[in-house]
Length: 252
Image (cartoon, rainbow, N blue to C red; front, side, top):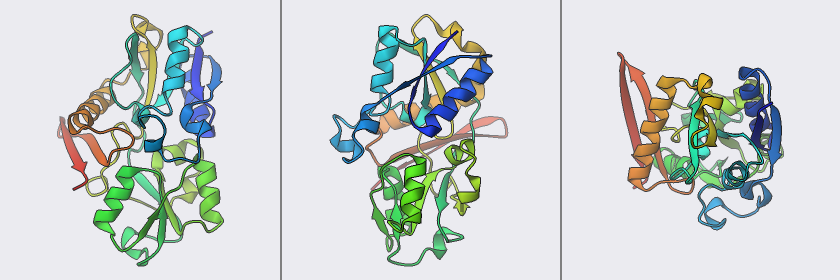
């Protein structure tokens, strides 16, 4: 049975179960990552800020502790470590950002409201589109962030729509942000399966070629912009009239 390395969070576990089901079975191997262990500091303060949710899983894969690693594609920042390969990118879910809270649109959030996010990209986009709101740092998994919202630590929070859907929490979505305006992070909404180089056949049947092409275009764009999980950059690719289109954003 294939051993699938995954973060311990409920969302990561749900995504790994999706992969296991598609493979006809698999053993989930939860791995504590640097980003999960250090929930107090901002991502930029943890090492280089890159790969905080992937490095430990990648090391386990290289050691042979697991046969494949399941990631949110947006967490795969920078270059692939030597000896590893992207074995499959599953068909993408909703790539958009979702706002949770009592408001029906970005325009309806009152001036001075506290909007929680740990993402430099989301903070940068909010600063451009709603410079009158206060962006407050908010770390933790999906459940933790929603609990902080409910406890009044923020008036609204921004999360990935696909993550809320995979956890059965679509009822918490107040509204979705237009990706033409609020450009998603590269890879957002997609699940990536990493393997050791030469072992791509383990998961190749799960690969969705159109999603892979879009995600790779987004990753290449962000790489050219010098981005990563700590940079205020974004790239979103989609298909229109049979052609792949790409929109990028970078904080001024």
